[in-house]
Image 1 (cartoon, rainbow, N blue to C red):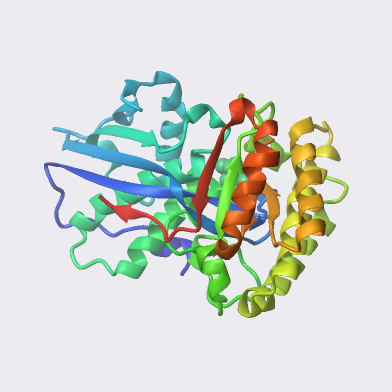
Image 2 (cartoon, rainbow, N blue to C red):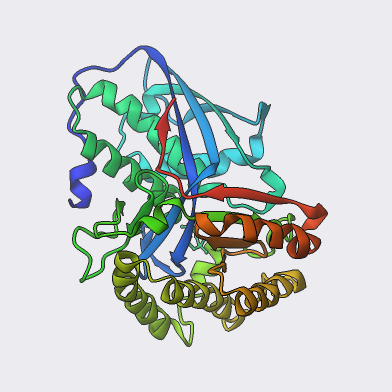
Length: 360
Ligand code: DP6
């Protein structure tokens, strides 16, 4: 599909009022998206595990206005409280997607959103938040376009979510989601995420992700600024090439359930992401001393036990522990005995691979 396919022709019917509700999960990238072109086009393709527990629940009440408004008309509740400071982000999102949802200025929206994880946990909520909102708006559009193809519904939801936050397009459908054009991945596109189209061994379908909360404060540098610093970055070209190669490597790793190689790709991706931050101008470090302490401990644990516990990081200090379900007991004991000490207030979140967004 191309961008133009997401611009609707006139609606035959526009409901007077109603309410829609969706829950969308967070996701954790295995091959990272870091660097983008205008209009939220990624500089390289990426792939992620969809999470299960960490999610956003959003409802959108809508009422048709007597006449089309000049500005967007909406109110916003976050975890039950009105949050004026979140509004500019939604306004920017509406501005980016209006071309594809031309009804936006004809309605007043009451958006009510909350996360299953604490907002101050340092877990990015933009992916699940933007995906849930995009799905609600698509649910509304579906009412205006009776008989909408379900496949189109999810593609457009992912397309819109991407315009809110790149990684959000990977939080709509599927347990393993691929986003970004790649010449060796059928159906891949920069416009939306797709369920990973090749064979995936059973071991990955119940993979565990325990998120160690190392630093719960605000990040010193936002992802958006970080992406920007990949322009003119001395290693950008090699990095984008490396992501491309890692996606090729992952194809047989996923099919064969090759955990040894999986670990190598995933940990290398995490460290490369942070290496890009450390080598941009201006340079910055988002890992904390305890991030490194945890990584050391994981490597030691692996050497001693031959288990398949590995880590990945997003743009922050928290550590995602990835491991197969059948190693859960040993890993959980290791977390309690050795790793909790490095978490802020001993906090961590137990999650696992999930299957995508749901209508409520
Ligand atoms: C490190 O999707 O948050 O988590 O498109 O500017 O909203 P924007 O960026 P965002 O970047 C995510 C970066 C990452 C890697 C990843 O999820 O692939």
